[in-house]
Amino acid sequence: MSTETAVAPAATPRPRFPESFLWGGATAANQVEGAYDVDGKGLSIQDVMPRGIFAAPTDGPTPDNLKLEAIDFYHRYAQDIALFAEMGFSVFRFSIAWSRIFPNGDEEEPNEAGLAFYDRVLDELERYGITPLVTISHYETPLHLARAYDGWVSRELIGFYERYVRVLFARYGHRVKHWLTFNEINSVLHVPLMSGGIMTPREELSPTALYQAAHHELVASALATKIAHETGLGLQVGCMVIAMPIYPLTPDPADVLAVMHADHANLMFSDVHTRGVYPGYALRHFREHGIELDITDEDRELLRHTVDFVSFSYYMSQCESADPAAAPGPGNLIGGTTNPHLPASEWGWQIDPVGLRIVLNQFWDRWGKPLFIVENGLGAKDELVEVDGVPTVVDDYRIAYLNDHLVQVAEAIQDGVQVLGYTTWGPIDLVSASTAQLSKRYGFIYVDRHDDGSGTLTRYRKKSFGWYADVIATRGASLRG
Ligand code: BG6
Image (tube, rainbow, N blue to C red; front, side):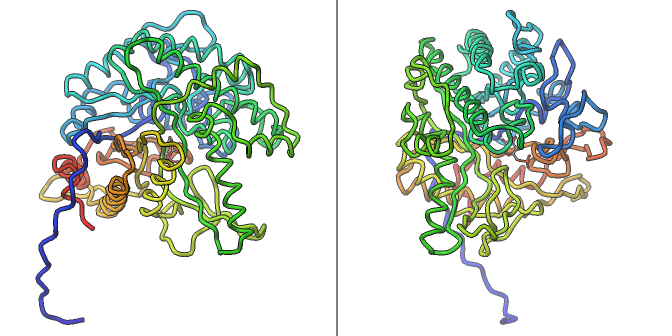
């Protein structure tokens, strides 16, 4: 390598994103709010899942459950939203905790104190002109519905969910125009308790019961869409899925076919949401696996109420192989085989910015519906240091991750894909869904709280905070690459 000092060529600014493009961040109630039993809130499944998705639920809340206090957004939302506004957010995605509104899930009347909390959050967003994007159900089924009904296995949940969404649309419909029905609805096949509130252990759950639960969620989602459209308030409803581009491990047609089947299991959910009917490949799967679903004529009618847009989380891609010996690697809920060409995060999630462009094109070509990237980010261990006397985190790794993904979003827009916006996962550090850790940090804002529950909850701006503010202010022109 030459020792001469190279003069870096002036970077050419990248093209700007469309003016209407929404920029922001996304959270979920159970991962930020805390206050798990305040103002009449009932317990949710998260309050008895202290160790993440792979452990059995406990009998009740335990002190080692970080979600009970989380990052105390319930009391600090005004300060946190002010920080989001400082970065220039035009959208904030958050979820409403079902068990704040209906503590048990099956009551006739909602809990006014719970409703009032989200009024306050919306007031604060309005103060800064930030558009709310609300997830109706984000991995937080009321515990009573899980224990008494086995969650979404029971058809009765459709009625409870209907009552809940009617309350939400009546209360907030004049100020919240964008709604997501279920977070990562396709994950119910992989994590039935967290995703579907299903208490029956995974190994004892029959395929019929599992797909019946998925069907009930699909019907509930369509019903919510129908109700939203009938309000006449111009509400826009999106489904929300895990996007996971799947590559064949080799060009062997058997591997390519394995990819097709894995894709079908994931894409069925958005196929139903966008087309209003079950695709032929799903019906064949049900037939050949002895899966006999109870699908009524009324269900079929409801499913025809299709969504206005498709939203998704994107963290990683995966490989698929027909070889049963190909070992599954770690990943975001849907496990696949490790790709030898990609680096991985500290938690083993493989980093693949190009996969985001691929999935945006795939989804656009398949459904022709506007797309919204509602989760993307890097979970990493951060170290709080002092720079010029100010506590911060020098998170260049996070900046690189987000930069590279946003460059691919820009490429997809150039490809002709209609993308409504982008919300990073965890604009502020929060409790991880899969591992229940706080040390798996995603934020632009560092929260002084640790896996052992210690910490002052003080917020600090990381280096990425200023970086994201620049990206938003320049509408992406400051991105590199
Ligand atoms: C998505 C979920 O699967 O990924 C979020 O919608 C979750 O709730 C996010 O937090 C990141 O996953 P994790 O396991 O790192 O928190």
